[in-house]
Image (cartoon, rainbow over all chains, first blue to last red; front, side, top):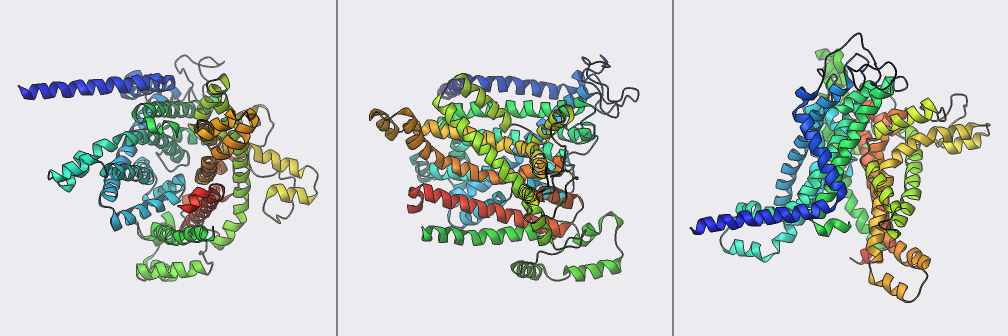
Length: 300
Length: 335
């Protein structure tokens, strides 16, 4: 009997929290627009095989570098035109959404997971452990992130997987620092002392007591890193160090399109535009999340 | 102040040593045989392999190799490029001014536009100017600059024909590079039109490179101004009947500049990453393009030392920012 009451009130609290979150989030018009665009992007990525009119790698040899449909010489079969080997731009862009979202999710998950563990350990145990960890993090941050990622990829070998690993390694110190700072301020709270007195072990204190209270800044950082990951992986692809052709990754598509820049504007314009719109949507969402989750950060 | 500087300098030593370990480790600790990597796809015979290993010192223990690397480093010897066989440091110093010129131009552009825009947006909070400029800033912040550069080339070079597509100066002009800074060299060369040519080559790349720092600076200036304008001393100044221009110019702006200076300083890392992309797009002969070319040519001594030099440079600039910070904000020195 008492069990059910507790469960009910838990659910109610969660609903209230969600409602409060949504209230603050929806105050920010840009954030809502960002959320809508991002949701569209997810839908496009999930249903790419259904939505794309052609295969991502299908080449139509009699339709090379066709302009978009509204321009003279355009073909209604290829709404956004075709690239230099006759592949449908629209279909490639649609399939490209899968890659960008996948990259974002993988990079943020690795960086978040690593950063949380490292930051928790540093903030919880302090002393020399903390010193060593934070110095190493400072070191990684001393390098310009794209350069470090580039060199890492060069050593690991160019390719999408290695690019994701490299970007995650470069991002991870940000999460470690944030977690550490949050853990340190939470450690001084009474509820932590209370849990310790009640006999909670270190692991329980770290993961069950403290971590849930440190999540707000981490979620905000995760969103921002998601957009940077999309940007940086596209940059690596553009430099020939990320996803390799014929993968329809947006940055790689841009790299392939470079030589046609003055002849066929559409092969250059559309992949970049999709990168910009996706990154912008995620950043808008990040701003809204920050306002909703962490009012203290609002001013910074 | 001297103590403040010294403590900051002392703090740099372990970081710099750490950077040398990372730069060294990249070629040596990660999987793969460096000799094979350097030999490339052609491969190498076992005898030649042993010979190369001995020549490059790879047959000695790792720790020894590291200390030798460090020892050479302190003598200013950063090794030779595998491709050009020239000393890495020499190549770096030749190309470095091109990147500095581009970076300086970009950061000046970003500051000159970003700070006033941020200040004005904060003063006119909620106005159309605030909304438009902050939307533009968010777009700039989200910009894939490698694409942005291509778009600008299409428009300004392709359609309008106003600016050249690549390089630092038109091939028509030739003069010895005495400083390495094209703007200065072209001006002192006395050749007619050389300076204009250099400027027209510099405009598009620096606009591209300035885009993200500009957005960051404008946003940061706006929020710093908003925060400062809510402070008691600003209200006091207003209450005293001080004219608005003086309140903002003297009281608000000066205090708001403290975080902004840090932000500007932090952009150096962003600039370096941006320089890699910008220099690639515009074939700008600077260290960003040099690094990319060396990475794709697997010229490991260049990658190793280039990484070290760039990280060292970023570190030094960050130190300068810290010191400036202490200079304009005495509270920092005390703590």
